[in-house]
Structure formats: structure tokens, C-alpha cells
Image (cartoon, rainbow, N blue to C red):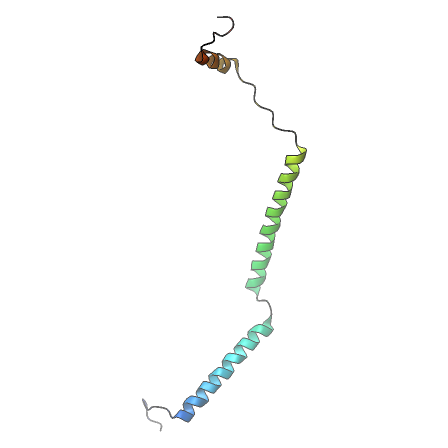
Length: 95
């Protein structure tokens, strides 16, 4: 019985399997009863913060689109105006 390398009897195997199953069940029950672990709390806080940030940004963007006046176009310089007219073949005024 006490020899090393000896094959354990079926009773011993069954007892070990049962003990292992019970300990596994206990671990699962303890994990469930523990509630939210700290990692999960951190993940939820970070995810919620990011979500609020993006939703807030989108709301501000929509508000700005409705309320702000449209952007004014930059005035075209006389130099560019001259160049465009020359391209089209129209002589610029004063030439």
C-alpha cells in the first residue's frame, strides 16, 4: 500500500475526486459571495468616465453647430485674384 509508484485504489481515487469537486465548488461559491472585485470596479469607473467624456463632447459639438455663426471665409488676396484672372485669360484691371 505505502509503496511509491503504486497505483492508488479506486476508493482513494473516488474520495480524492469528490474532495476536489467539493473544494472547487467552495472556491466558486466564495468568489460569487465576494461581490465585485477591485479590478472590476476600476474598469467600470474608467469605462463610465470615458463614456461620459465622449457623450459630453458630442453634446457640446451639436450645441456649437446650432448656436455658433458659420465660419467667415478668409478674404482672397489681390495677388491671388490677379493670378486667377490671368489663368482664365481675362486681363486684370489696371493692366
